[in-house]
Amino acid sequence: MPPIRVLVVDDHPAVRAGLCLLVDAEPGMHAVGSVPDALGVAPAVHATGPDVVLMDYQLPGADGISLCRALRRGSAAPAVLLYTAFADESMLVPARLAGVGAIADKGLEPRALALLIRRLAAGEALLDEVTPELLDAAAAAVGPADEPILRAMAGGLPPARIAASAGLTLEELDGRVEAMLERLVVLPRGHGG
Image (cartoon, rainbow, N blue to C red):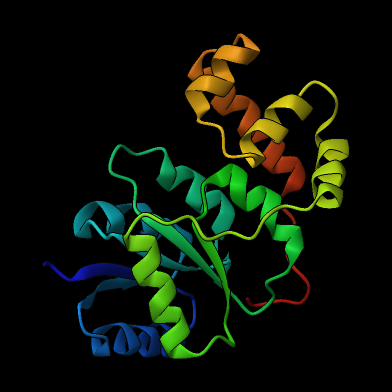
């Protein structure tokens, strides 16, 4: 069985190097590269074909949720594991809209992080459930016109089904999701994470 290919994205050189070492030390995993900023993510994904992108949430040039959304549009899109020092439940709804596979706190034990990578590579979706309170707050932020789309996407319905039920093309749905993400994505507590 080929190793799980992992691309590491973090703006701190020591963190990138440490994560690459961690990945390469795990049996059946290989770090295919590392990227320090948002601009390098798409070219690195194209060049290396990772199974999982281990991505810092806050990067120079963009946030990890927006980057994930861009990556998930591709036909052979990798799973994305957001890695942040400031993980909290406020990230869940935007993460679901963007197609994030999991969110991990930077304080997570190395073995637990490796297990998340393995599970994502196997196709599991590992985001926590969105509470009704979080969903209601997100719905209020996006407004009544987009609320049904938000609720359907947060519930995991496929985009084609959501578009059909809303009377939209997939391109129109994509535009609506982008607009919702702009209203929902906020930097988590603190900085640098």
